[in-house]
Length: 193
Image 1: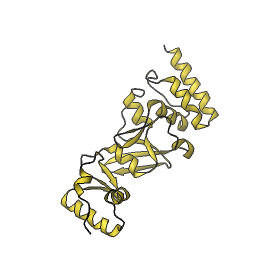
Image 2: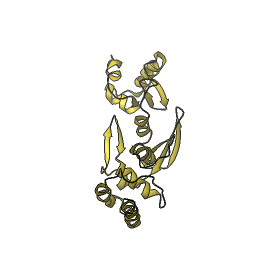
Image 3: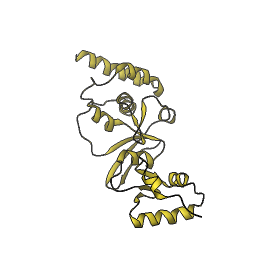
Image 4: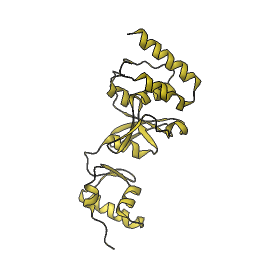
């Protein structure tokens, strides 16, 4: 049996692949054959092993793409998104991810902090964008995610938030205390204008 050309994988814009994705992408059903082929590609430098069952094209892979492959379903959120949006000024070295479990994982010298969000909220698509082969929260969704897990969180700058979107997304958490907290943050924001 001839295998599909590895160049087909290397030409895609994805930088990180799971074992299952490679099996589907190559149209293989024989896991043993695929493991041997992956081992060969690792030895030749065509694949860079990141973690058991997860491989990158090379060392210049997208770490956010890796984050959502380690634990699925998941999406980039919390401080990672809000720092980029200018809502939080403190820099964090780790990547924060909303997931079905709470866990810290170090992979290829990068710390990934997974925080558990209840299943109905985690799988709701409100405020989730697909970007560069990974899912990432909008700043409004990330703001709500933090409030969901932290009752007393300090935000440095609430002006980048679209408050209509914040209030639109609030019902997916089905949490009465969150409504009070978000209203308090909104009042605080309005008073600062």
